[in-house]
Amino acid sequence: MDNFLEVSNLSKSFPGFQLQNISFSLPKGYIMGLIGPNGSGKTTTIKLILNMLKRDHGEIKIMGLDNITDEIEAKANVGVVYDANCFCDEWTVAQAETAVSIFYKNWDKNRFSELLKRFHIAPTKKVKELSKGMQMKLMIACAFSYDAKLLILDEPTSGLDPVSRDELLKILSEYIEDGEHSVLFSTHITGDLERAADYITYINYGNLFFSGCKDEFVELFRIVKGGRDELTLNLSGKLIGIRSFSTGFEALIRSEDWKLFRHLDVEPATIDDIVVFTNQEGDRDE
Image (cartoon, rainbow, N blue to C red; front, side, top):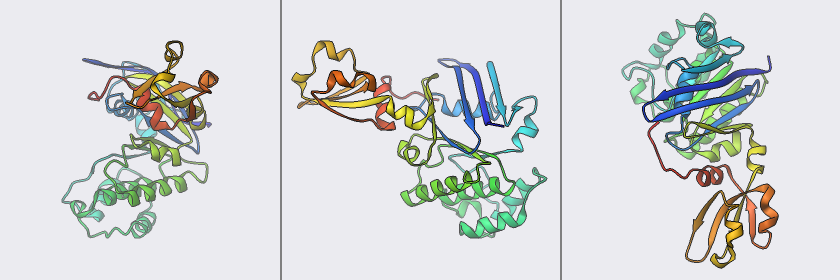
């Protein structure tokens, strides 16, 4: 099986928002970043994959299984980490294990114990006594203890300190090392994806902007900088987005157009640059 996740022509309508014909594939053994400004449809897409929302149109396959007709079997291979605690606050860590383990026949109690030691989580601690980073590690420990082949994370680094974010990225890199696991990683912290992601899927207000190799995505664009008097009318039509300053401007251009701007300062674009300059409509509710 080449792809652990296949999303084809996925659509979902809400009052004032429509997710339209989203398609992407996540190959086995890789990390995919799911990006877009607030309100673009990232969380909606994840909820549709997990069948927490009913799709209007399209198809979703998890390890070759339909996420609706084969939901139980498909979800047995999926681990999910949310941006907020999903356990009862009053549970101890040991009680959280009991609650989760009954749903997985291949639960490995020894593996869970080893992960708690690695993450420095005491089984007697109450969930509410754990920091946000520790609660996330607890969710990861649960997913790893039944050997989830596909890990889905929704804004996992939001609110984490730099040390915790760095540790999480290391955990994810180790997770896919054997080539038998994959990660779908929704985030607005694009610097994390610069480090960890192999693929990028960019959804912009319900529409698919790009899905493919991260390096290919970044290579599609450049940043151009210059003085205000250096931007001529015939060149302005080639700009995808622009920031103007009292002393000059900076803008996003397609790499294929860079020769038109070679008299100016042309630099590589980051993922963050691409998202910012292609987003012209501000924040919306997702």
